[in-house]
Length: 143
Ligand code: 8DG
Ligand code: MG
Ligand code: MG
Image (cartoon, rainbow, N blue to C red; front, side, top):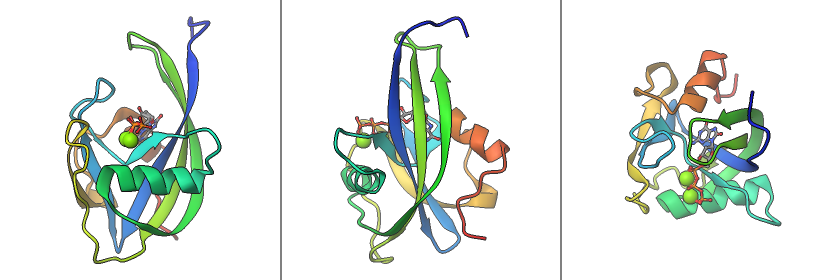
């Protein structure tokens, strides 16, 4: 890795599970445009991972989270960007407070829409950091 500087950020990524399905949306972003990814966002000063996950999910889908827990962490370098960046991505598993609640596309500038997908039948292409953890055998469903 030739980069010697750039910023390191913390992202919280939400694996929202409903039955056998997980919530994914198609990104509208300079980072991973048109690829499918889990809801996510930047950790803000003073927040817990749980608070960040609940806030980002609410901002992006209007959904309210029930039980939530920490799953894993990944470390991702984005070097092919105008501003190279590095993300520590904290993966949380969550379920809905009310499983009948449906996602709304609150930020259409950043997402084409939300949908429920089976882990064994994920849409393509996945956002590459997500594709990487999936390739590594990551599975957010409890065993
Ligand atoms: P915010 O301004 O609302 O706080 O942030 P955002 O605009 O919602 O950020 P985001 O792009 O949705 O998520 C933050 C970053 O998380 C994203 O740019 C790259 C990083 N990230 C990883 N790994 C993963 C991953 O597996 N899935 C998702 N969705 N994001 C990831 O480093
Ligand atoms: Mg986001
Ligand atoms: Mg956001």
